[in-house]
Image 1: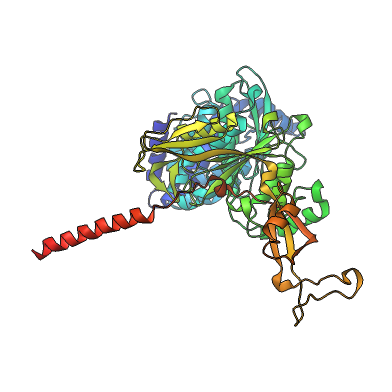
Image 2: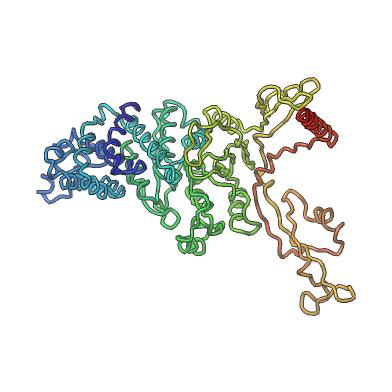
Amino acid sequence: MNHQALSSFIWSVADLLRGDYKQSEYGRVILPFTVLRRLDCVLEATKSAVLAEFEAKTKAGLNPEPFLLRKAGQSFFNTSPLDLGKLLGDQDHIRQNLYAYIQGFSPAARDIFERFDFHTQIERLAKADLLYRVTEKFAKVDLHPSRVDNAAMGAVFEELIRKFAEISNETAGEHFTPREVIRLMVNLLFIEDDDVLTPGNAVVRTIYDPTAGTGGMLSVAGEYLLEHNPQARLTMFGQELNDESYAICKADMLIKGQDVANIVAGNTLSDDGHAQRRFDYMLSNPPFGVEWKKVEKAVRDEHEKKGFDGRFGPGLPRVSDGSMLFLLHLVSKMRPASEGGSRFGIVLNGSPLFTGGAGSGESEIRRYVLENDLVEAIVGLPTDMFYNTGIATYVWILSNRKPADRKGQVQLIDASGFWQKIRKSLGSKRKEMSDEHIATVTRLFGDFTEAELVTALDADGKALGEPQLVTGTDDDPLPPEGGRLKRVPISRIFNNRDFGYTTITVERPLRDEQGQPVLGTKGKQKGKPQPDSALRDTENVPLTEDIGAYFQREVLPHAPDAWIDDEKRKVGYEVPFNRHFYVFEPPRSLHAIDEELKAVSARIVAMLGELAE
């Protein structure tokens, strides 16, 4: 089934639903029915053999399930003598027969329809006298594997998910990550792994998404690998909290021939569905700025009782935003470097880059991933890229198998200017990254190079042509005669320690009425100046600087009586992303502004003079 045929079919079903269903509700009927028809077609060839085996093994008092799976040749089966075609033969009892047919599926497949809440839709369609007509529509669609293979069917299902996500903008962000963002993440995930991408290498790898949604990230990763190396096999794992999204993801995996037992329902933070497992690759787009109060007890218990033996040893972020908990969860799922290691990509908002001072949960998490040399790169994305938020977002790439030239370093790539407008806004999404933009970011990451966008300006400061991307290995362009070159950094490389600092507490003496320092009278403080809490201050000293030299240079010239309280020192980490890409533009001279004002004033006077005539 090609996309054109798919679209015309979808809207022929939608025509039946119009009036009884809102547009945003069409997916609740069409998605489960599409899954049902696909499973119906896949099992048709082995139907009679499965029914015969079921009867024989049941009579023998044996558990028929393993025998039926073998007969069906699939990861699911159905023991009902009915199928969609036979359902049409009894119009008066189609509702009861459809229930019986769904009950005949093996538990993993039946769970999909339960999560879709298909029972409610069957009742609603029956009440509107639409159940038979909708079933008839789907029974006539040929989704047999001989006509539509798993890859094509996966593409069809992806298209359906995309269409209904676009129709229902208010929930699209919960279920749907823009495909160009996923493609960029997948590119960055695989680019350094030649053994996986080399055609002919029959490698097997695992990929995991703890916030799987509808399975888009897993699907795009699978497509990418299939495109570059058809012999490679990617086994997919995931977990999803939302029932409808979970049902869609599980159905998509079933359609593509994946083991649906690898897709688990539930809250990843409080109930890890893949405990003890480790993965080669991981992808995640956790919810932004969503509090984790509901799972706070479980998370704190794990943090306090298990420490670094659990997932949240380094620290806990504030309860108002749990996205960094997913970062720690993914770190805990990395294979040891001795077993090949792992790489993962996660989408986060700006908050995890800098929120929280030294000693806070957020800073301790940053400290852990940077001091353990896990961060390969952070890519700043354009704003207005996601369906439910217009805020700035960042892709973090982490790995415990960094190539030698990356060790001890982090690459920051500012791709915030790499976008084009989309034809029609979808919720908050107004921009997209083109294939060319994705290729540029991928190349900068793959080459591990610094880069600038260089624009030639004439003497008046006007741009001459398009900006040119200049990397560390390119020759510098020559400035135009009388003009200059404007340089905007796009990719920068830093040492891990560049993001660290020590917060020192600077004390000044408490003074009596005569202005003399008050001295301690007991214990260790005897004879020592006592600090004045009102004058207490803190300074952040970069880890790359000597604290004593910094204190001598920055503090003592202004407060000669100050000292450092060494017991209050704390190490912190932050990534001031925007500061590293800020380019100072000197303001125009006062003379130029004055001349322009005079010219404007003269024009206004002339216009007023013309009106007076």
